[in-house]
Length: 412
Image (tube, rainbow, N blue to C red):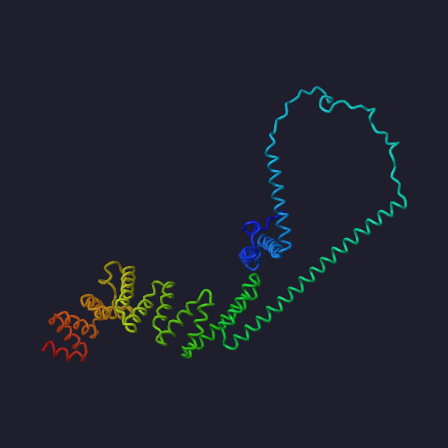
């Protein structure tokens, strides 16, 4: 006798919520759509469906529990009786002839078959046979009628559930068409919870989420950031897993709407999946520094970007990369990194570290006068007027005329 509780992995006599939870877990795992071509999974799926149908009906479950308890009690008693008997090996006997094994037979006790009573085939015989066959036929007809009736009731129930689900699905689509995307998706998720093994509703949800993503992309390209961000918040809750493109749109929309904390949250999620994206790290640092005025927090990201810069260059040119790296081929993003890191250090009064950053910027682009001007300003704030004036002069020589006022004020 199959123990359905053991198949579900739950205690005997469990309540229906426990049974339903175990059934959903196994049904999703062994559904034929998830195990194509796996006959064993298909057969096991049939068994768990049969178990759920029986245990979901209180009357049948009560009868089954009694039978299962009786089965285990009988099995336990039988096992105890069997184990209590001690097997004794028979003592071998010496056999000299066939009579020692089977004993002697008296032929006088042989039955005389010619005197045995004969069975008569008469009218009464046919009457008994006819009544027996008639009774068997009536019982068969009754059983078939009951089975047909139960199947008919089952088909009616299935039809009612299907009609109800189709109506709910139509209502969800109508809500979606009216722009109530969250309510529509919540309705479909409720259908999925009620019908965990029906793939139709999973497909409907995926199609609706994909349609919403395409609509949101159009709004984003049209710069309608307010409407786009509302749709993106719905996608965040129902798109599983959430696509990187969705996170990027969410970050940019929040940035355009001045929701800087939410923009950083989205960018940091992208960074979890793309930890070595130096441009992304610098972008987060820029928001902290220029939009939120949190220079120390910005420095944490600029430092991370600087570490990656050195790691990339060391991997390409060795530990002494600054001596052999072709600065003219260095990406512009690195020059911007050191300038931004220097600005953040200046904002918190760390002029010595800012000067180091400007040294790197000048090393990468020695013909740009702006870096000399900014480094000279750091020297001035440190009180080193001599070095400041040299940088001011060099900046002017490179065509930066805005430095003239500083030279006249501090150097001439």
